[in-house]
Amino acid sequence: MCEISIKLKISFVSVLLFFSSVSPAEIYKWVDEKGDTHYSQKPPNSDVNVETVKPPPPVDTEAAKKNLNAQQEAADELRTGRLTAKEEKAKAKAEKAKIQQQCQRLHERLKALTYRPRANKEDESGNVVRMSEEDRQKDLDETKAEISEKCK
Image 1 (cartoon, one colour):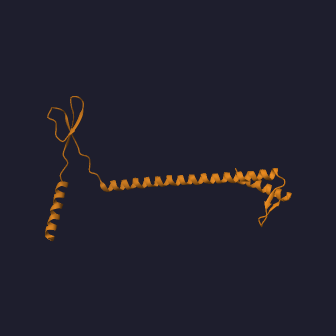
Image 2 (cartoon, rainbow, N blue to C red):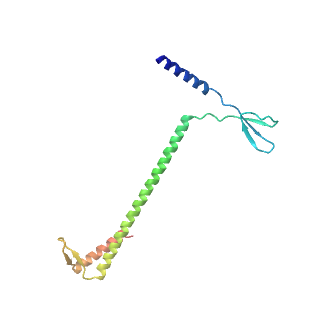
Image 3 (cartoon, rainbow, N blue to C red):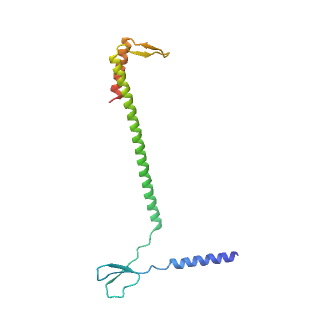
């Protein structure tokens, strides 16, 4: 049983080697009376100028694999770069929206402190108490400073 299997394998390898060593057929190229270009494995029967075309060179599979891998890596890097840029753009947009919202609140606070001399605030225990004029001016100055710092 084992001898048959080995003989079969040797025969199969021999057949493969025989067919792999066969050279490619010649290709003929010619132009007919109408100006059409033809390609064939058999030369034409008529008296036309026939040119023999060389087969393409064999493909270096290792170089082709390396080239394909390099192209795949470049495409992956490009894709990663695009995704990173998209994420960064989304983060920047969210940060900008957050800053705009903070600025809007600061401007509303500034308006309230400016036009309401009787401003209120919460103390440490959470009770609402009226601000003194000194506290209101201090809070007004702090709000203006925050606006100039954050809202450019």
